[in-house]
Amino acid sequence: MQDLLKELKEEMEELDKIRENGYMPEYLAKEKKDKKRWIEPDPFFENILDIIYHYDPAGFAKKHAPKERYNTVVSVIIYRLGKVTDLSEMQWMIYDIFFEWLSESRILPSSDRCYRYIAEEIWEAWEEEIGRLGLTKSTSIFGK
Image 1 (cartoon, helix red, strand yellow):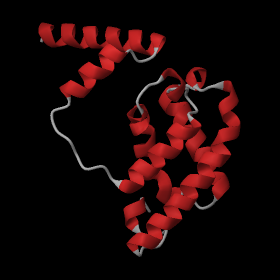
Image 2 (tube, rainbow, N blue to C red):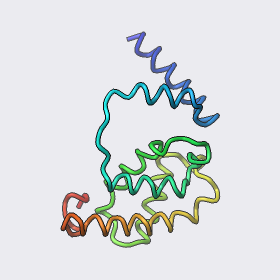
Image 3 (cartoon, rainbow, N blue to C red):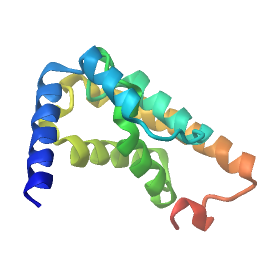
């Protein structure tokens, strides 16, 4: 148990250092090497991830962090899509997720404007995905 706690503490210290300084090439190389298996990416997930990374409300792209840094946000957005009924709700949902995930202090001050654009692009991607799958917005796969 002591070994596990020590290991977790070291890992947290390393992550804190990375958060402060941005991603370092050595860490990225180690992270890539440590991955034990590869999973085929979901095109819809990847599309949403690309949208978020493009607008970069938390500044990860500016620090050259991999876009996977936004994986948690994208997962939560996709999970909550079924509860959204219009574009305005989508915009606030996305902002709330970033606020919950990163806290207000980590969200870039200039990012407020981008949530509308993120919402519009995700809404469009969602409509396409629903059409591709032959579903409706009320279908249970989207959380309703």
